[in-house]
Image 1 (cartoon, helix red, strand yellow):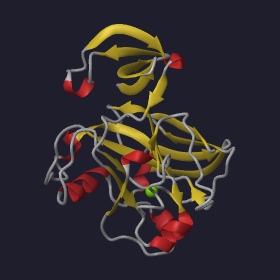
Image 2 (cartoon, protein in one colour; image 1 turned 90 degrees about the vertical axis):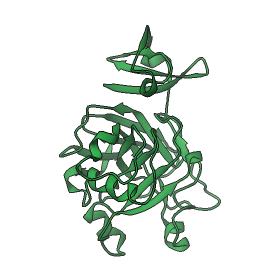
Image 3 (cartoon, helix red, strand yellow; image 1 turned 120 degrees about the horizontal axis):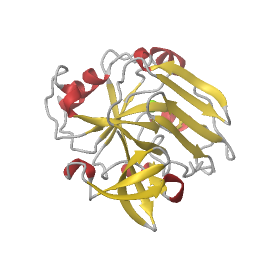
Image 4 (cartoon, protein in one colour; image 1 turned 180 degrees about the vertical axis):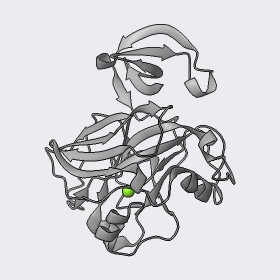
Amino acid sequence: MKIAKFAYKGVPAWGLVDGPELVLFKGHPLFNNYETTGDRLALKDVQLMPPVLPTTKILCIGKNYEDHAIEMGLGIPTEPLIFFKPTSALIGPEESIVIPSKISTDIDPEGELVIVIGQLAKDVSEADAMSYVWGFTIGNDVSARDIQTRDGQWARAKGFDTFCPLGPWIETEFEPEGQLIETRVNGEIRQSSSTNKMMFDVPRIIAHVTAAMTLLPGDVIFTGTPAGIQNIVPGDVVEVEVEGIGVLRNAVA
Ligand code: MG
């Protein structure tokens, strides 16, 4: 099922995506047994929001596709490389990525499959990992490449406001193996790969992360991006598509 968070008349709510409509959940679907009110809204009449609780953590795996690790040129990780983006960077579908032009114009989108955690997770084995997953969504790990290189630490380069588009919804029945992942800018394909090309798969990532830190429901993990990074400029429109989930679309301002 596809679960969306949205604002309707300025109030956040959750709904089940049913074709062109949303069926409203009573409260939060994860904590309320997916009970619905039966009320329906047209998807076109709502503003979709990032589908998080909010989240306590936005974790990302760096250089998880070998071809991207090679284009970045700083070696291939031998275990999952973890970094954070701040929650203040989150934006939803159709919101604008804002280039911080006084600080950097060397801005790349990174299309990524994103894991959404469904229950408290600590020291989870690879064998059990999938039972802690609520579902999957799509993210764009927008990065100021010059600052990433200059700072060493990636917090600022990947942490600007609006640098974390997320959505359009959570797909709870998604199988993370062998799905097409594609990033398009103004309709032109920039990144096109398969989730099978991840060096560390979803269970390995969850086991690795939870060996270090406790994950809470609603925490999200970006699983890395394939090769094909290239700058975006104001006026561009970025679409990240993951087969089986949908399309995350954001303009650049
Ligand atoms: Mg990334």
